[in-house]
Structures are given as structure tokens and as C-alpha cells.
Length: 322
Ligand SMILES: Nc1ncnc2c1ncn2[C@@H]1O[C@H](COP(=O)(O)OP(=O)(O)O)[C@@H](O)[C@H]1O
Ligand SMILES: N[C@@H](CCOP(=O)(O)O)C(=O)O
Image (cartoon, rainbow, N blue to C red; front, side, top):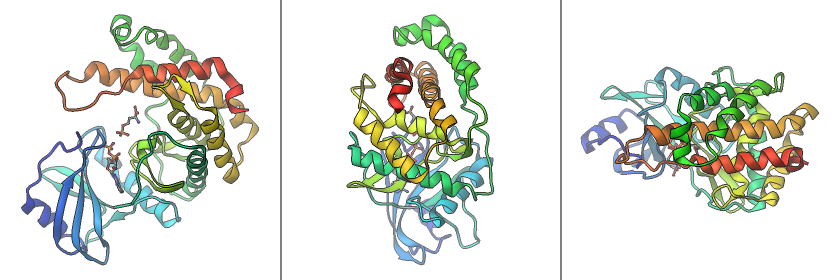
């Protein structure tokens, strides 16, 4: 479910009239996603095109940070990355308000999210991630990562062992693991603006080509190798995290390093960064699992999927990144 707000045809038409895109032809709610409401909007067309994504920022996003997120889309798009640009209204604004909620019109990009990536697709996403990291060096804005290892440890320790254990047997042990990972977290690695949530559902592909990177609403400044670790953890597993797909993980790494070779310190840090990446999603998923009312129209994501991935990194260590 990802349409939390009903917008009338009149409201949509009045919004569209603020942009150089022609008149409203249709607006269809998009089912995917959990954070924001999204519509696919078609218009009769103007200087800015005729197909767009309209996003209404519903929760989890501090609208004061929208200039960082929307400016990043424009920066990466202008740098030639497959990232949708923000459509600005006739007055030049990147976002507007409807009934007190911020909305933005975003370029529509073609492509589909793959369910089971091939090595060729993983190589392509690795290369595009590295290109994105290089392109963010000239982005003038910054935003702190509020979901780092300390936050994961804090979120997990904010729940009782009993409630975590009720979700899955191995989950309470993640409290100590998160504290250890936070204490050992590597410092001084090369930093940049990172996506930090580059899961397959946030990438659009046409065959083996990446046609879109979307959903930059967790982007922040942090270690670039951490972003690679998040992407590795998100892409390289099957069977709900139970099976590591070495051919996919290796291809992702090779694609990344074909554009931006890792420094020795980054390579050495990868196993711990990958553990931290898994714990970031274990903690947010566990928190959402315990906090979401059973009748909410949102599909809860299973934290145990990322507990299993964590255990693979914990036991596999550097061997997984050789
Ligand atoms: N620029 C875009 N071009 C094409 N489709 C998009 C674009 N942005 C979002 N979408 C579609 O909308 C869905 C939800 O968007 P997303 O930003 O992931 O929402 P959420 O932040 O709620 O997870 C995506 O899975 C994709 O199908
Ligand atoms: N990728 C995260 C969930 C983040 O939500 P999104 O819908 O904004 O991408 C996870 O899988 O836990």
C-alpha cells in the first residue's frame, strides 16, 4: 500500500497546472513502496515531458531535508547518472504543498525491479553505484546518517529480549552483536554522499542495464564502502537470506571496482561494514514489526531475513570479499 492520501481530480489538475507539463490526463496510485504516496501522472505534455511520478511525503521524512534529497536527484541526473530529475514548477520550486503535505513531481524512468538478479545485472549495479559515489563528490550539500551502527544498537536495546525473541529465535542475540559492531566500527574511511538503501526494489533495470536509481530518502554522508556493503547485503542473497549467492556478490564487487577500486582499508573493513548494514535493517524491521498495528495496510518486512545475512557475514568474514 503506498497511497495514504486521496487526491481529487481537481486538486491534481490544479497542481499539474503549476508546472510546464500540459494538462492532466491521468493519475494512477502506485502500489509499491511503504514510506510515501506515489502516483504515476500522465499529462498532455510540455517542456518538461508528459509522464511523471508524483510523490507525497507522508512520514519518516523531515521536509526540511527535502532540498538535500531533491537537489541530489538533480545533481546526479545532470552528471549523467540514471537518476530521475526533479521537475520544478513555473516559479522554480522543487516541491509544493497540498493540504500541508509536501509533494514533488519527479521524472518517470522506465525499467523494472528485478527479483533475482543475474551476475551481469549485479555487475551493472556495482558500476553505477561507484559512478554515483564519484559524482556526489561535487554535491555541495550534506546530511548526517541517523541510522548508523549506534542507532541500530540503540533501537534493538529499546525492545525487550522477550518481544524480539517472539519474532525469531536468533533476534535477541543481535542486541549484543549490534553493540559490538558499533564499538568496532571503522573510522577514517573515504566518505561521500551515499544512497544507503540500494535494494533491488530501488533500482529499475532494462535487461542488464540500470535505467533508474530511485528512493534516495535515506541518502546521507557516510563511508562509500558502507554503501557498497549495504548493496552487497541487499542483492547477494536468496531464500529469504538463507542462501548466499557468491556469483552475484562477486560480480557486484567487480562492477564497483571497475569504476572505483577500493583502498586496502576499505576492503579490510567490508566484513564489519556488511554486518553493520545487516543490523541496520534488522533493527528498523524489528522496530516496525513491533510497532505496526496488525491491521495496518502495510506489508511488514521480516527482520530474520537480515539476521540470516548477518550470520553469513559473521562466519564468512573476509572470505566473502576475496
Ligand atoms: N522516477 C521513477 N520512475 C519510475 N517509477 C518510479 C519512480 N519513482 C518511483 N517509482 C515507482 O514507485 C514505487 C515506489 O517508489 P519509492 O520511492 O520506492 O517509494 P517508497 O519511498 O514509499 O518506498 C517504485 O517501486 C517504482 O515502481
Ligand atoms: N529497504 C528497507 C526498507 C526501506 O523502505 P523503502 O520502501 O523506503 O525502500 C528494507 O528492506 O528493510
